[in-house]
Image (cartoon, rainbow, N blue to C red):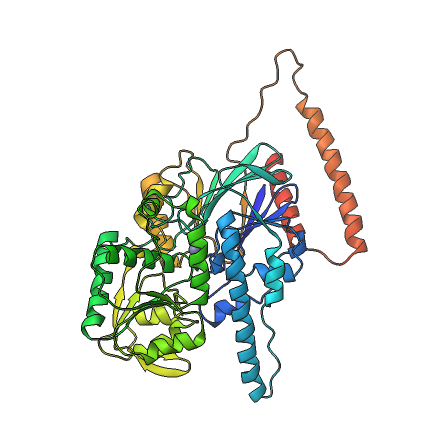
Length: 531
Ligand SMILES: [Zn+2]
Ligand SMILES: [Zn+2]
């Protein structure tokens, strides 16, 4: 049997992390993401791992987004010494993102320490430091997609394009079993078909078990063309009021996609002549990585390059790296487009821009990404009249445009279509989604494909058994096997093993929960054999 423990990215879109254990006792992780979205989720980042980091031989990383990669430095700090297998662009993006995440952790801890000192409290330790993040990067082992490797004895793996962000991957795993092998597919975050810059998600045809994301499992995105028209409307609205257009955007992919669309508007003469700021040091670095990795572009992006353009450049575009430059944006009057992180308005420079502009009639706030529960962005999208920013109540007077069509995630239709490629009718586990979204997708999957669907809970352990046990027919010339003798021999082995176990148990008092689980599993199997 294969065991998968869902340590994150279940019932929520953040904190993705799955522990996979083979019958041979090999342990691998799929993703190691940070939980985000308010205190109860943030607190999970400091809880016990639920395994020993030093026992993990391989970590497969589907993509660079922090909700999939953000706890890697902590994993390394806590003893991980294995290899991190991921695509080359993901490895490169991690180089900037994990350092940025560490910086945020350090700043956060410093702020909390100051606050706690005023109340005579203790110093707050960062979750991890820049040093930990630097150490973590040394474990990255870039692997081009589409090739099968065997990073652990009995576990084969292949990365496939997930079409979500640059370098994002689907993971296929073949895990050896006592009888045959089990194929498990982790979709990672899946892109949609007309996703900008990156190619369409790879179609997978077979799996015994499928872990698939369900971020937008209950929604259909507006078409891309309608979304572009809406973005133009948001820009024109603020320009007519001489106010600013704020676009909270994650530094990786979303920022580059917005630049790509603005570039298109500009080449078509549709973009008003106003300054455009990318106000995020991380987004600036990420854009450099996007420019470098043309080999992973789709045909449309390549066509722009072939016409002699940079898909992420415009004459009015300014990258503001320093704090002074960032402050100057709000000192200047008049319209401007400001793209800043983070995408859910919970941290980063976007908070300053919101503080200066959210209360202004005539300004535009353009929401282009998923807003998780508990975030400032979600409160605004849900219609809050005011929100707290840096401890201050700020009125929401700017016009809020929620544009779903730029999402880097597949919507319900895309997800159903992608699952429809499977010819093997895998058993499906719906992950990376809030419960409403997962349930809606689950219902559709059952109705349309008659698939068996389960929505795991946090920390739930799943036992995956081979769907079909292939028993080889003995060659004709050979004598028929003596099953009775084989059975008796196995019973003797079992008795001996149990006796030894009982002896060891008396000698030590530390028993792991997982050992109990394993034994119970054996017991259940045994009962089935004897009946
Ligand atoms: Zn993602
Ligand atoms: Zn994600």
